[in-house]
Image (cartoon, rainbow, N blue to C red; front, side, top):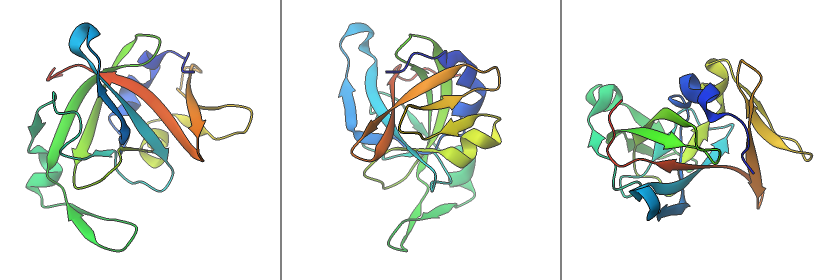
Length: 160
């Protein structure tokens, strides 16, 4: 379960790189969309597919304007199609901002390198995995089938 203060991650979440599609579903209360990020030590960007988080507007973004592309596991390059600026809440209800790049992926991912560049510590451990913010608060990850997942809810098209 995620019990840590999500607010402490606000400065670093804009660096997360991917979101897991199997966790995407509409949440009727407050009309927020539930989703999960697979926390990935090999991802260089936080990314989502264009068909994910459909209630959040995709904008061009700097990376798309520059023609950035990403190499995927099989060696192919996929183009950056824009970005989604998200206002999200963790399980404890605290809100934060995330910018995810949009490209043709089948799961959303959070970049560990981006999170640590923002001053966070990411710990993968059999006794409990978490993201620790610079102030020491922890956001807990759930291990599922060898993947470490971060559950969040996104507010529809809320600019920040």
